Image (cartoon, rainbow over the protein chains, first blue to last red):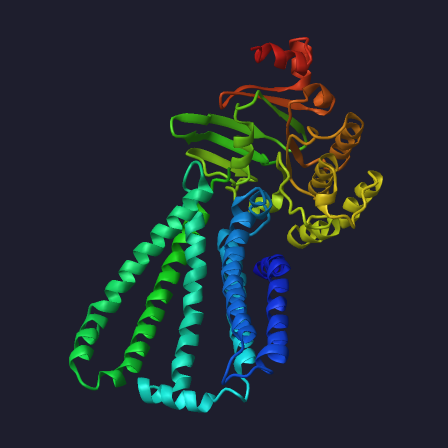
Length: 265
Length: 232
């Protein structure tokens, strides 16, 4: 049953998301062939700068749109009038949630990879001295260019799980309202995000290696610049672990409400 | 033979309002049952509870002695009272979807009924009229070999000419061990196909009787009795 749900959920999500991401790739190829590949990087033209700004805005829009489409599909499929079909096929709440989580998370990661791929493809041109940039980066921050981006990439993948689950839990908590459930879900999402950010900040700032101690020490120590890189890694891994725990807690609560508190309007 | 549906002390409360109150009901197999009552009497609430779309405040509802869940969904074929299918899907896609999820779905039966009603299965749902969409929904639901069919207002949006076909479809497409629970306001149209009627008022069952008993003992049609009981 889970396999069937995955197939249909993936098909439904891809209907909206596939064209968007194909458009991103086409734009990246166009940009590489006609803009970045032909541009004068030592003296960038207004057209080059304009395209870079536009390209960045498109990528940010597609990232936001992907998250919104995943969240809206979860709501529409399970809690709008379409829920009358979804909840009367012989699938359990755990199967529904697993399918929506896997397909939603898969598309968020696909989005992540395509955005990174598009950026790399656009900027990876011989005119830009990437080796020199990487060397000076390592010199300034004390960690290698690849460690920095590798860690950022992995934490991004972990954080995406938490992002998907925070949408889902907000939507199911919104269903506990007797009226205005969509508005309820939006309010729950912002309140939940605020609370989680506050808790995460407490974890990041307080403790023997906390950011607050680092900031004080870095301002007084003469060679503080070298430790920014390792502090960044610590920050990212702490964020990753906190996100993973949050995502798992959100998943369990979402499942409980879907299984025990379903009340379709 | 065990009953297909049982409700014991079934109650659904929203704040201080009782949508359904202490309802006790047993339905045996092999009958067409009319679930009748004015707006807000609790018909759709009862139907949603049977399908597990609502959680009861108290009491028990069971289908084939099982509480609503994955197993009962295999036994119940449900037609909601609204457009509930994705409108961007083609009818062929919907047939494939139903065949994928319901082992008892008959593609042949669905295609035959679509042909009878001259509905092209390559069309997307959103291109069809409201009445045709309702016919498609009913065809999908009646193409299953379920134990319990629950039809919420199945003929409300279709023209009178199509009603006869739909009613004959309902009668001809369920086996003798299955039960149909049918909610409607159009009592006169369906009276002749009903074996039993249930009257609901303010979330409570006020009548549970066979159509023959009503005709023989009260010498009234179901429609007349309904108008008498629920006179405003």
